Length: 114
Length: 114
Image 1: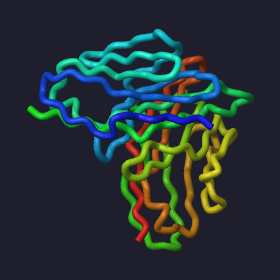
Image 2: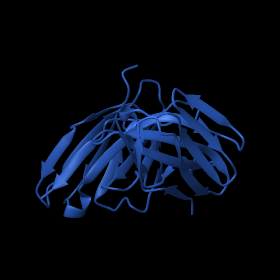
Image 3: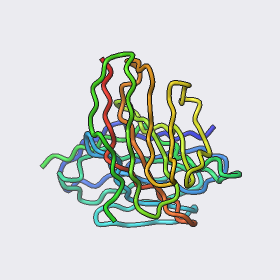
């Protein structure tokens, strides 16, 4: 069974204090790893898709990296508006139309103080 | 492209009542997914459609739950004889055909069963 573990559960940062969020996963053949941002009471907002170990993607203050066992979301010089829950999900390779689903971790709640 | 839309955004019902939610995916997205999210947890997969065909259902989807996508466009999720444990955020996502694997989520429908 596919599993995703995110750590820490919650993270409080001072504005400008860089840090990393961890996502460890086990999956029967990785098709893709996904990062989403979720604000309270809203649906997840897509950030990144990573397909293979060694791949990196960047967007503004965020950078996502992928190894064979884990992914990191690096936040450089965060601002208060970066406060949200960050979700990591994996998709296994499809077999006959099955395994198309995403398996999510519990998320990491990030709070950035001004 | 107006994004995935869901209606209603909020629903309060009494235990034992039936409820129905609607999801309109991004136009031309042939795959549509339903997930459920409870407080402090990541979204959990319920079911998905490719066009009008329901290809996979989770064990979480009890007999009281039914989903349809009759014309391969919008989808409905019905819960019969609601229970307090059904209280959650119900999320819909859609994906474009092809190798791009990213699922785009709607704002969700928050259900409270009293």
